[in-house]
Length: 365
Ligand code: ADP
Ligand code: MG
Image (tube, rainbow, N blue to C red; front, top):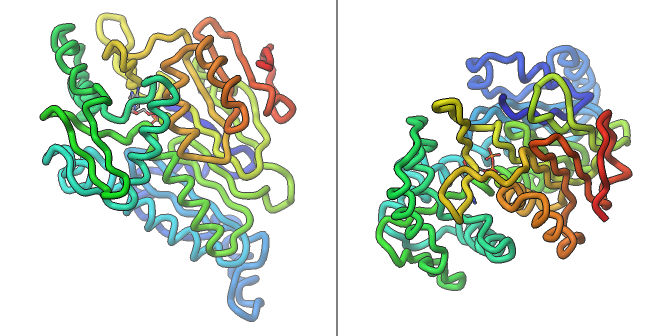
């Protein structure tokens, strides 16, 4: 039941077939079957740079996720190497699992000074929190801990405990000063968690690195969350398969994209089962329980990776009706693919022409 959005027509098999050891090698290289050709082309070009269709790939395990980064053409190798470094930096900075990370330190101290990075993430998180009426909430960590999602020690917490912990997730108790770059927690025990937004921010950062290096075609897949730069090298749009939450064997559909993030939240991504009930990792801030909104998969498509990630979590919590309403008021900034537990599929108007599926689907206008 692992999430699996595939970027089609590129060899994701090379990724899913890789052993963990392979991922940890972290080497930057052209894919195997084109390696020789690349070397030859590189030798032939005067600056020693790859020709326009050469591919550089890196596979990293970070953020508890298998990450694949690909870039094409001139400077592709340098760009993916830099992107890998950035992923590792961000992991060290944002990971709640690392005691020395900036976020863990803030949580341990009950707030304090923020880096530029966390200032930006705090700002974006609070914007999304406000605009989604709290469906996205960046301080759910105490609740995540109670469910054991943080250490994989899964358990169903007592209702009373959850009620108590919900006082720590009251966003009004958090004071953020953007100019001073500080955050203060009004109640001791409050804790930040950028887990609902960090991967989208990371993919957006990778696109910026690609652009800095003059790369015109590239992609990153973080555990299935995809962001692409430009088109494929053949000039046609990237094709991103949206996983069917019920089976790994088929897609809900395929989306053609250029310069977009395609980010999915699904209950199937991280969950445990107890006494026949499935408990997943997207928490409804109103209850402290895994969101049971009737949606089982939400994909957000946007040029803004950070927004796409935040909204994928928020719209999953909202459910179909509210998600639809939210899109109608914010249609210029994103599109969405929504799937209900009953098997209904919805696609918003802005991407309807780029979406294809074997299933019946309705277009939200
Ligand atoms: P994934 O990270 O698996 O792609 P999401 O983007 O939906 O999925 O993020 C889920 C993560 O976000 C959880 O693991 C947790 O760290 C955090 N989270 C859980 N519920 C919420 C929420 N309502 N708002 C913001 N973050 C949340
Ligand atoms: Mg998210």
